[in-house]
Length: 275
Image (cartoon, rainbow, N blue to C red; front, side, top):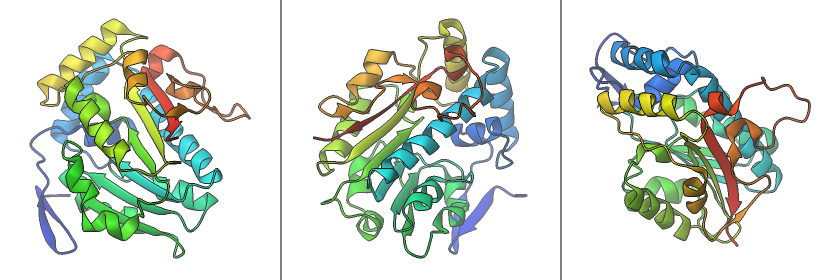
């Protein structure tokens, strides 16, 4: 994209290309092309101190695919994906609709470039539905009260809430828990929470250095330990195998996934269900 502005459905969007954004850095780690000079510069600095970032990003993405496939297989047909990120096929709705073509998804993100590329998230199976909402996770009430949510989801029935690689970007513990608790409280029994979260448990020095890089780029990060991640799921019942490194959560039985270490993943993952 040549300029610093884009559009979606006729709405002009300021893409803020002068500053690095975590979603575009993540896209860079995944080998995507929707990233710009500021993103690549910050990502390069992150790779200098945390060279496994692309491995961690791919492991996180693979966890999302496995968890959504699993939940769709249990009968969940509604998904709320907050912090969607730049579209990278297969997106969440593609995975869910492979299992259940009638699955419905509400995507939300606060990166203006995700909004500009949201059309890729709206290519739903005709039997299902996908909707995109430009929103900030720090304001969960705006998500829960939006017309887009009412269009896509029925909160009287179970919903899978996806907070994948998101909560470490809310460094204040009290605020992070307030956001998660508000979202959890809005969901019906039988709903699930899918979470992955960066941690310093496996590679403390590297995690500290990469956190400093993100902070310097304008995006503070709070790595959390296993029990801190577990606390976001309080009151809900964990699916096996509990809170584990992303690549350890129900790996593909054929062993087709790459061999990586906990240090390379440097993130926890879990799925829990509301009683």
